Length: 310
Image 1: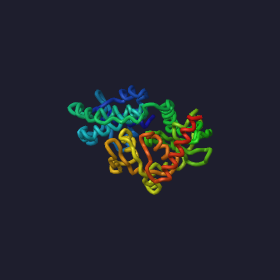
Image 2 (image 1 turned 180 degrees about the vertical axis):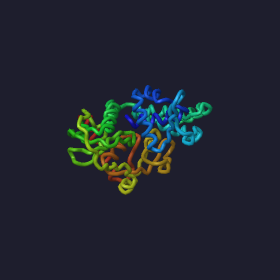
Image 3 (image 1 turned 60 degrees about the vertical axis):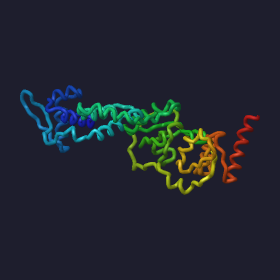
Image 4 (image 1 turned 60 degrees about the horizontal axis):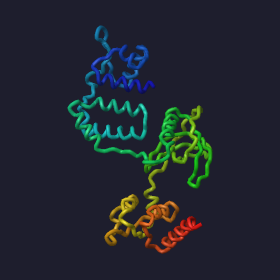
């Protein structure tokens, strides 16, 4: 792509004192004429590139526009590399690899070791231990569709298992709570939808190119809505599930109950999702109050037991 080539040429000119048009043409496998046009574009963008003729001639950026590598502190470079390195573990592609290489070119030799140590202090891996093997290849297909503005077709299962065939215009990939989603305009529903990747199957990229419409960002922060819906219930848990309960509330909600148990003020909404959370703690969790939720837990537990009795 021309934009990628222009950025790369700028980085090369920042790194080298002078380079010829033929050298640049050989690097990018284009003609010298194309390089001259690229230099004109860079000049029009406000970056003054000077051309020297004769033996040893070539292009260079005026010294007053050179970027001093020391402009980035050790902390700055560590933060940038940390973000790019962790991003590369989730999204593969030449763009991230190239960006990493460019940032690393700014690292002075005398600071390389210190920066490497700081980058390795934090590692983020949001991929599941086990899970849907289609997620990674589907991400690559969706990235291509996003870059080329091509339609996607797929089968989609809702939370009850009902499957429908959809055609969607892709607009954004979203990573929320360790789950990937596609925000797209569904042509079957004539509206924007947030599709969970684990519910997608038979994904295909179409040859049809769509004209992007006014983009509607997905609503991802439900904190205020949940705060108005949640109420506190009291549960008694064994210490073995404490770390999992802490995913939903803070330690301030815990009160020691003997040597191995805690009573917890647990945020709760009366729906399937929250009842399933309580059941996920197994026999290490007991609902103490209110009585009607305790009764409902007993009813559901009896229904589960009946499945095995039969």
